Length: 428
Image (cartoon, rainbow, N blue to C red; front, side, top):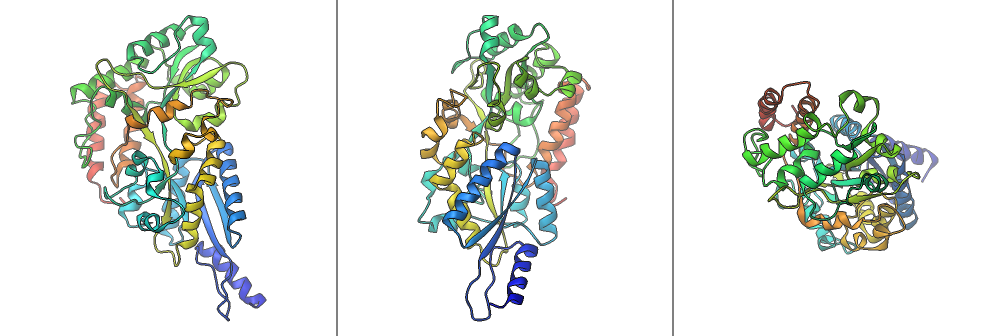
């Protein structure tokens, strides 16, 4: 290969961001280059860099450019722009609540046939609940989920002990949770921190045998105000702030986030997914752990799936280098690497049950709660516009949660505002 041709080939890989590689005039294949786009904070991205290093060592003929962004919103903006410009990344990591718009537009190369043909990984290696969330058509896998997280309660063991509150345990109830939150709210501290969002509200609705939407398979409307079981859960959730005052009020949450309060030891309980663990592991001043969500009176255990998957862009000249990366990332070595970062609950079941994830020397000591929740996980609807529905719902739900809008008026406005989004044409 001549120096000029090498420069041309390198330019094509950089500009077009495709995984096909280049060949010289005599037909010899040059190195392949792929770009992987994902989101995460510094600790999480460090884990992905280790993953890429492991892949590169095992696959020296493939160059990987890791292109991280800080938030899911930035990721969505990056992907939207790159697809519109005809220069999408080879591989991207996307949450199941956000991939629908790209799947509906045919922008994602479905992974089902690649997984079926793989000799390195197989479908039975992974959690069926995580897999099902990425079957956009209800049958074939669109993307391959790398994690199986859920909403849990992180709790400050020192504050519980000082307040004489029993430690959270499997099967504890909404009443137990509220009693603990009240006992912990004193001396400038608050009992619980929770984001007013549909993803945080959903498990309580499901635990009370309610539904978020009129038809989970083909939703046309939210049912937060109409369904009695759902409305009871919504009111219980809103009352944490509006009635019981066990959650930091609006102004205080704006000045210091609930996560920051928990890190500082001035918040008894913090509701989040596994994403919080790398940051929580920086805590030195007190003992903390993870517990399951409380169960509604007469209800059932429930939590919400938090899962991100590796997707391949459609239309690449050659998907093989991208798939090789996904195979490695979803293999035992790749899944162990991310489990050891603290951020990920592996979707690969053998790794999830191994010391790489359940290491008792690393907090939270009760990491088994994420695995115990697996049978009770539910996912939000797989629709092209769900990301829009969720974003608008979260904005209005926050208004009601902090008392900026009357409860009844706010819930009515929420359902009316969101309803047209369910039938919005893809891409609008």
